Amino acid sequence: MRRTVPIVLAGAACGALLLGGCANIVNQRGFAPTPGSVDKLEIGAQGRDDVVRLIGSPSTVSTFNPSIWYYISQKQENWAFLKPEITEQSVMQLTFNDSGRLQAIKKYDLNDAEDISMVSRITPTAGKELTVLEQILGNVGRFSTPKQSNPGAPTSGGGI
Image 1: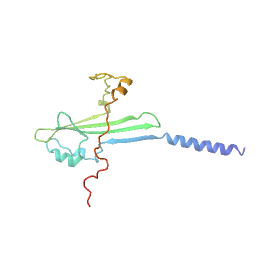
Image 2: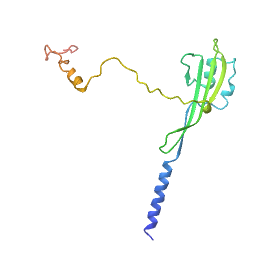
Image 3: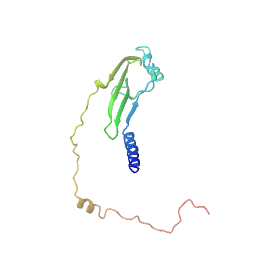
Image 4: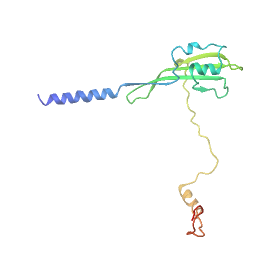
């Protein structure tokens, strides 16, 4: 009876440590505005500098149109060793007109997201594939030691 109590306590302690290691981990990434700052955006009233002062610099700017700014945030949760799962995602798109004034605000969430599959094609390259033997023998004789005319001569910069 006396020997089983420490074993049960040790098992309970190990179980608690294992369950503690499997806690749910939440990661918030990206744009995190101060409360109410996004509500202060007014179409046509603010320029780029005003927007930066109000909510901060954008997460990214459109590649082909620098008048479109994106503010991106994401919340990921993962449990133990499993793959992280995106539980919340928010993208705010700000469009500016030619004079630099705020023209439009669009908001997207996780329901608007689309999975993009990677293309598995391989880009061919020019040239010839060499075997291991061709690679080893191809370098034979290409390297030579530097020639030294007077190995004991002093170098410049030394004062007497």
